[in-house]
Every structure is written in C-alpha cells, then in structure tokens.
Image (cartoon, rainbow, N blue to C red; front, side, top):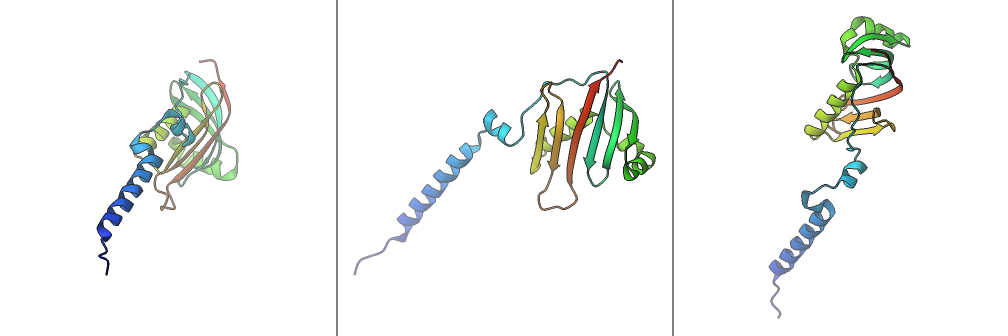
Amino acid sequence: MTAVRPRPRFVSSAALAGALLCATTACGSSTSAESAERGEQRTTWEEPAAYAYTLTSTTQVLAGTFRVKVRDGAVTEAVGTDADSRRQTQELPDQVPTIGELLKRLNQARSDNADTAEADYADDGHPVRISLDWDKNAIDDEALYVISAYEPTAG
C-alpha cells in the first residue's frame, strides 16, 4: 500500500491560490490605469468664484432637479424644477451642494473606502456625474449626482 501525503498537495494548492490572488490584485498596488477603470481619476478643475449649474440628485436626503447659483463657494440660489425639488428647496434649503462640496463628498467616500466612488468629468475638468455607495449591502446610502448646464458666471 502506498502512503498518501496530503499536506504537500495542500501547501502547493494554497501557494498557487495565493499566487493567483496576488497576481490578480497586483499585491495591493494600484496603477493610475486601474484607478481610472474604477472611476478614481482625479481632476485639476478649480471651483470658480461664481457659476451656475443644474443638479439632478438621487439621494435619500435630496432628490430632484435643481438650478443652482454659486458665489464665493456658497449656494446663493437653488430653484427646484419639479414639485418635489421645489418642496425640498423650501424645507431643506441648505442641502443643495456646490460642485466643490460634491467633490469633497467624492473624496471622502474614496478615503472611507466606499464600495463605489466614481466620477465622470467634462473636458474642462468639472465633474458631470458622481456616483457614491458606501456599502453595497445597504439600501439607503447610494447617491447619484448628475451635473449639467455648468457655466462660470461673472463674480
């Protein structure tokens, strides 16, 4: 009868599994190409002193479409374009963010290792879409912000 030695086979299987895992995750390293694939590209856009934009937001707190005016880093006017967003601007006027605040939320989600923290950018570098989900297993923490009709204005 032949003696069976399962331990070496187990060790080699474990080593192979570890090598494959390390290869597929690049041993914890991340290249800029991989970051871009995950939506983690960074922008060099700087928030101007004054601008206007349209925000379509789907979050637990803020949902609807808003026409937003910003001056010196603060929302000076937010107008809802539908019944829900008009009600929200009356009840929660401080909840409509600047684009700079949206970028801070994106960066915070990335720092917190959120399951999703992605953005798409226009040619000038301002974000046009930000998608956040801190925990893919939670049902009330997702946020989608679509930015359109962005235009710098006279300060």
